[in-house]
Image (cartoon, rainbow, N blue to C red; front, side, top):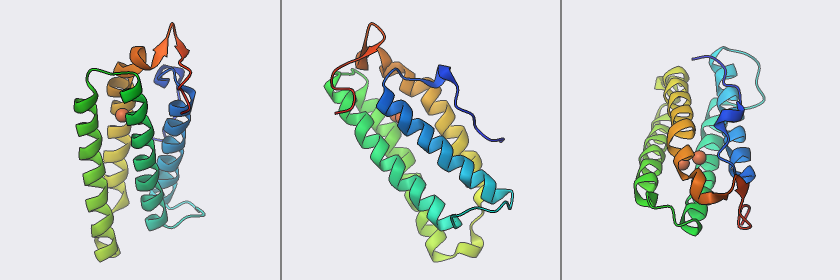
Length: 142
Ligand SMILES: [Fe+2]
Ligand SMILES: [Fe+2]
């Protein structure tokens, strides 16, 4: 999979969450640079850790806003988040046990594919509950 570019159609209508998604794309693109063997300030494990920590932080923000917006499919969305979190953590553990056995390309492909589908499909579904008339609600950045 190629580098990921932010597109307006990825917007969920809440600036704080759009910023999180941009940051996740940025981290994935750094991983892509490492996979291609380009110079990068971070090591593979740093990137993996940054991605996991930032994903956890983002999921918490998103879940809090979904609760505030009384999003009816909240439980379903949280279980999707839980699944990805579990897979990322198991990857991190494998990486720590034996870094030589871990290949970044399959992880990159998996995460890039997952993240894009999640932002474009699942995250779009909560949009009407977290925004009003296309405007972010006052609790946007809460
Ligand atoms: Fe989500
Ligand atoms: Fe998200």
